[in-house]
Image 1: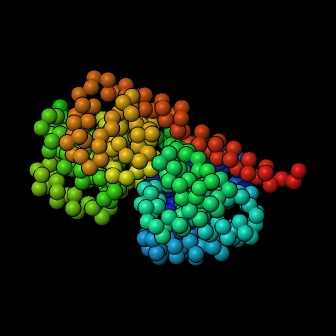
Image 2 (image 1 turned 180 degrees about the horizontal axis):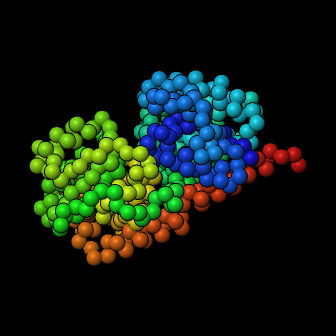
Image 3 (image 1 turned 180 degrees about the vertical axis):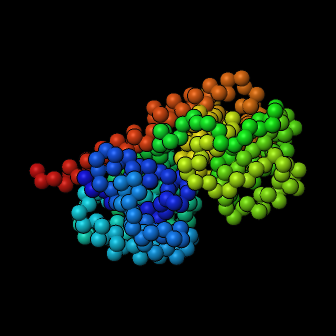
Length: 372
């Protein structure tokens, strides 16, 4: 069948949503389906049209990375979306911004519309009265609604009573994210290394990790590599210097997706100090690399992290973060937690399993369209 996806961001943009959509599309192509994506030219210099691992990608104008920019892009992408939907069997909106263009395509073609709701931004907007009404109409528009976490699914159903939203955790490309040779030089003798694969935005809580480092360094010789960039980088670097831990924190900036497994495997433990979170693709990628995970007890993170693969701490609490991380580093079975983490991802959250569930949904919807 032909599946038309719409997603505001797509590789070479780096992020959990972008990774999820790309690898889902690639898996669907490998299963014999034709997949096209309408997205934005959010990265300067990207081509308007290209084929990436069998996925046909169409990029349209994108003014800015903010709410106004998303809405403008959604409206501007309607002509291209409708044109590419003419022979589509299924339309799939990846996030709420993508629903209106595909509603227009559905009106023109009659193809069923699947929606997936990702990210903590959806949760934040759902708290605002005006946006609650808007998001409720978008949820009600879907022929089948998906959410990246149980929390998002519950919120979506509260916005549109009577409309079900299936919680379906994002998947991981376990052939790429697996134990590999470390790409960073080993830490100094006796020093433990953490990795924090987080974009440097306030919602990701990296400030609280930095504040935890002096507390952690009192009980264990530790350093951390931070993989990701964002507007908080300067503030975090200054905070690290003020707290006397600048020499223990290494800001690597944004790195291409293919480099991430080697960076993850250069550490013993991953830390996710998020203040808000859907189901974190990055945390699942760490787990797939046999890395235990310490994470905030918030959003979808407790749906994937527990004491058998790592540990949870209270969000925005440097003392609890330091206590949890120190406890994990003191365990003599830390590597076994990592192996258990990979087993869990392979058995439950591999990208192949995710793609198979999507095909089941698509086939059920298209079968319902067949004449009796």
